[in-house]
Image (cartoon, rainbow, N blue to C red; front, top):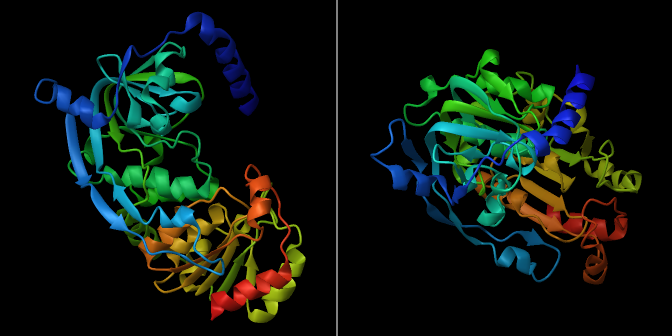
Amino acid sequence: MDYIKQLHRKWLKLTTPLLGSIPAKGYWVSGKEYYQHYQGQLPGLEYHTCYPEHDVTYQLPRSIHSPIHAYFLQKTERKIPEAYWLTVPNGIILRAHRSMGSVVAHDGKVIHDSSRQYWYKVEENEALYRKFPAQQVIDKCIAVTTDGGGGLNYWHWLFDILPRIYLLKHGDIWTKIDYFLVDKPLDKMRLTLEIMGIEKGQVIYTEYNSSLRTNSVIVPQFISEKSRWIVDFLRSYFLPHKLEKQIKVEKVYISRAKAKRRRIINEDQVLDYLLPLGYKPVYLEDLSFAEQISLFNNARYVIGLHGAGMTNIIWCESGSRVLEIFPSEPWRDCYWVLANHAGLDYYYWCPVSPDENEILSNGFNNDILIDVHKFARVLEHFES
């Protein structure tokens, strides 16, 4: 079956430039702009604010580095955008390349912030210049809850896709939805859809290079900022599903030894130092979703190299300590933000010097070598 799908995708890639058409002739910068333009004129058009826009101040991280890196200093004050869902009557859902989950409204204009393309300039939206296959018509109400291809990643599934689904629990829209368009999750994550009340027959998985036309498209906001409401939602829905028999490990080291990239080359030396301190290495690929929740809910110290496994700090109790190791610049703020919302004590460390960072700035996914003596000083600071 997979082989047939691969052939089908290759066939579409070859024929679409000849037989397909460009779906959009203009754009709306945002779903709200589209709604305000047609408000009161278009049957079936709805807009519901789930959480209002608000400002937030994040606490600075802790680090053995002094002073705290400017990257964090300039990100402490943030504006969290309004969280909403929008109904688009007679819309087109695009499923290809960057446009996975993009929506073209009834008037032929693409709603720019309806997919991951929100970070591109609006005139660069590929719905304005890329040809798509002929539309498949489905006379049903479809909710677009995709991530644009990142759904297979644990972080993106929990913090991009599931929050979009949760927004549809607000207002009176849930019972009107026939299908949910989502990226195909890892097998261990399928149960999250069941927990949220989505039946197996309601799921449509994304497929590369296709488009759907439907009488009603529901577009929850694409999650660009990780807000406090997301942490509260995930904890309230999924903490009750941790194992009844608790995994009680107070100190956790997240290993990336089984990952394909961004590994610690001399991890055996790092473990020689960590094990006597009571840290237990964990390989999250081998744990179920419930086991991960249970493990981190009991952990009080968590150490890990930047990666999706760090998402699990969301299950830690308030006051727990987290040390995130960055392989090089550029920095990432996602787990620092998450730690702030969850009430965790967040530390960071980059084992390379600023001069080396200049060289390695494009090597964020490379494997790294850690100086254990430097690491020992970091641990002393982390646990003091």
